[in-house]
Image (cartoon, rainbow, N blue to C red; front, side, top):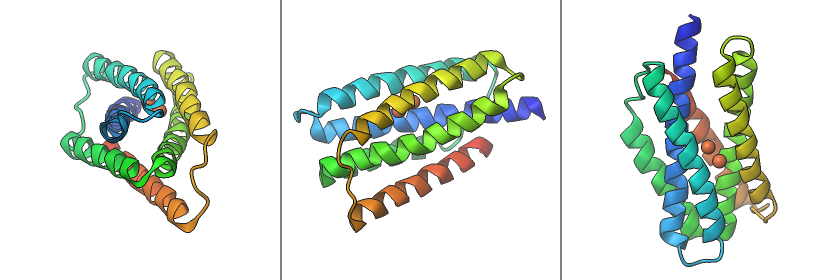
Length: 170
Ligand SMILES: [Fe+2]
Ligand SMILES: [Fe+2]
């Protein structure tokens, strides 16, 4: 049971970090010449490190990756590109929504892993801290308080949570 749950944690985190990489790549594809691209690139580099770490853990813990990787990959890139096209507010609304979900997710995992797998727990705690830096960056800007942006954030959160639930299992 414990082993199964830990495998789920690694599977979903690898999928999630792949999603994060792809979102920032999608945004950068649209905004590569804008001033914000430097910050997006910094976040992309962090997400790449997170993704690489979970790729490593997939091997050491012998976890089968989610079969939905190609779908998350394309979907997340599309979400990034779309929000970037919509403008700066939407770009950062996307960061805010995704990072809020992932922070909550890492916090729950860290609580679960405490005393069960301290090595993995340290990783989820460290990454959680780094996702908080991404959220702080988004929160320094206006991510929109109007209906469109509030709806966008809600929608992205629902999508992210659903993707998490599915990736734990398949
Ligand atoms: Fe990440
Ligand atoms: Fe992040």
